[in-house]
Image 1: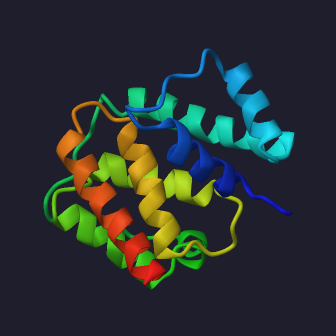
Image 2: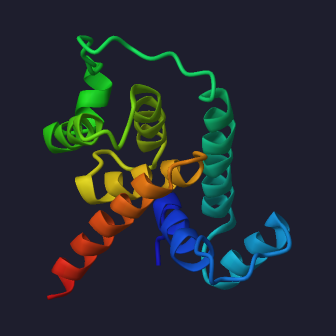
Length: 159
């Protein structure tokens, strides 16, 4: 089975990022558990690097520089290729709804482009947004909204 870094991230989120799951002692233990679950070490390491970057950039993001209300985000052609019009529209929707600010949007775009996929679909982008928000302090209400949005999509696909 060919698992991607995104699959590892999703597995981590679903199994280790809720309050009811007891914490794992350290990253080495977690890496061993992931390998035992069938993930390749290279993908596990990439997933941990991806998460470490969120944590590092989230701390840097505390020094926010807010853009003027009249500013608009222009996407680079590489970003346009990887984030289709639906994804870019979804990011704009999240900004207009107050779920993401410009700093969070940039972190989401950075982490979305760091995934090992050629074109990111909006369902994966929702997970990226949620994972980024989980690393931002004081985002509980926004996280709840995103969790509901992600779980609503999952439920719709099951029926």
